[in-house]
Image 1: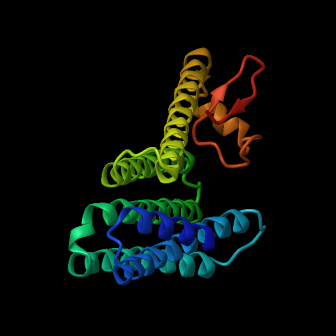
Image 2: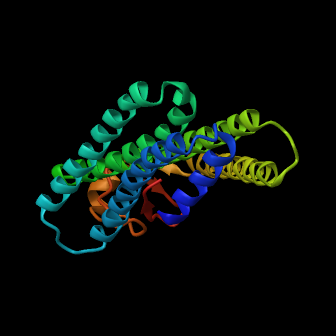
Length: 236
């Protein structure tokens, strides 16, 4: 949180109008958003922890889901205040607001799919696929917002080849590198999945009924599966 605030305050102070009262109010506004984002990330870590425990009461999941919904609503209300307090900085603050909402939505969807998996007798087999594409979409959109914000700061500050410009350039380079890495990873995964789909046949309902077991990889019930040459069945 301290690193986040220091980074934002330095850049806001270097690029925005040199009015300390305005910079202070803007930094507080951004700091509250960062604080809510930390709660979203903590909730994600909490879910990862709960999934490793043998038995967890549904009340805990409901409580955290309600908490995330409250954070999401608070983010939207906080952003609406931007229109009143910082109308001149609406573009910059929108790019600051969107990553927080995307992070919160991503974690909230993970909790909702987990709850659906708990509610259904045979589980929710599409949960992993939904979570994968939700996380991928959120990561790409957040990186896109970050890239646009850095480019906006460069445009506002002007190119003068000073310290701020060098740091902004390095950050733009880092974001582009991360975006490229995400795209390459998705491409490779899509190729691997396409190969598996084409290479192995789908298990029939009779084979699934006779097998009547969990997937040995993800340890969840199989309503659909791929059949290997040795006869073993696994989730795609």
